[in-house]
Image (cartoon, rainbow, N blue to C red; front, top):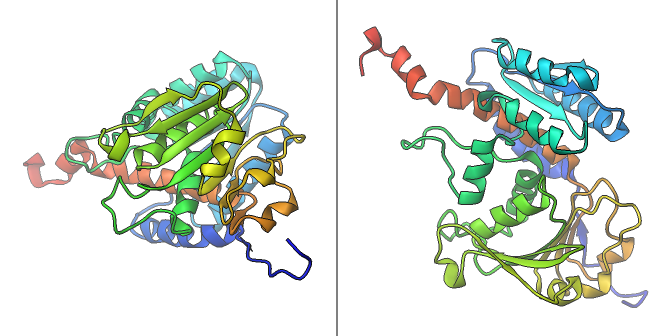
Length: 325
């Protein structure tokens, strides 16, 4: 790009996107008779986790939620979660990971009661997400909870009109080709699955290679399938993509801007800056971070959990005169 060429890229900050989601949350909150109570459990020395906990608490309290943070030792996390599961005043639980940074963290994710799991990490929620099952009940009164960071990226794509609202719900990314540079079990793989379940062709990139997530040609299948792209790298798939989403945690990684299709939309969910400033020379839209959206999604999940309890068959039954149906 020459020095005199116009700058076409628009940088959009997470705070701007979060405002609309926050209004939706506030509307739902106004219909409740008490403030939902979120309990945070912090058991590590990670400065990023402390910052996230502080931001969560501030955003929750500023928007009409109750928030309590418990700082405990690693050996006390399990009992703290179990106690919170049985505490009637606690509506939702968030545990700030990593704690042990191994399979013990996965175990802790599974002992959080599903009715309080605002992070969407319980087995049932993960199963539903990968199977493209969007509700917990046959009457479609209780929505399944999705992991906060992948859902935050989806809400950003909706805000940017990457989703086509003219198409039927569930197919609204049909025709979109998306690259996700990260295939962690916490964010990258779930995000690729969710995008493919909404109709996109997704190239999931990590150090081991490239996988393609789709619902088959013409999005004919109910849920996504995964195909190994043998011999492929980011060099092969990124130039094909309308959207490039990065989440590489290392501070040394920089996405090669030369691979971007002109006018691509670029979103970074890593706490590190995966794109250099030159990304703006090729991208049409750049979202450099998503943290503020993620926190609002967390509160949205908490609100949904409270709404799910109200919509549960037992709760509906109890609300009727004499328990009649």
